[in-house]
Image (cartoon, rainbow, N blue to C red; front, side):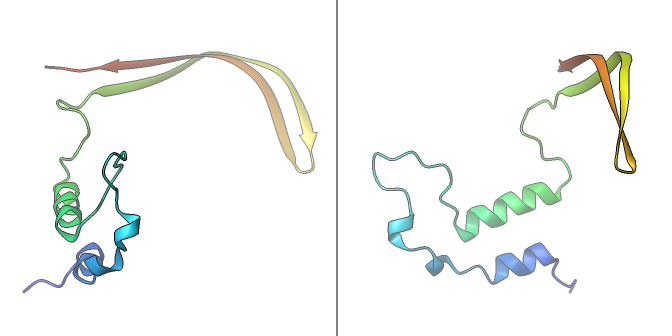
Length: 96
């Protein structure tokens, strides 16, 4: 039998009784996340597949920085700080 990973060890010792009823979402409230041992184990198993992403199909994101222009440099202690202007373009695409 394989030894448990650190995450699996943490799930194994997760005590569902550690949640007080007062800390869980009540009727009419917005539930961000009421985690249980089962939902935590499912989320960790999904993440460990290496194929977990929030979008389906996953998008491809490109960050482009161009047109750099150095305006000035000033010495601050032993470091040198540069003032620059630049253009930034973010591209997000999905291949279906």
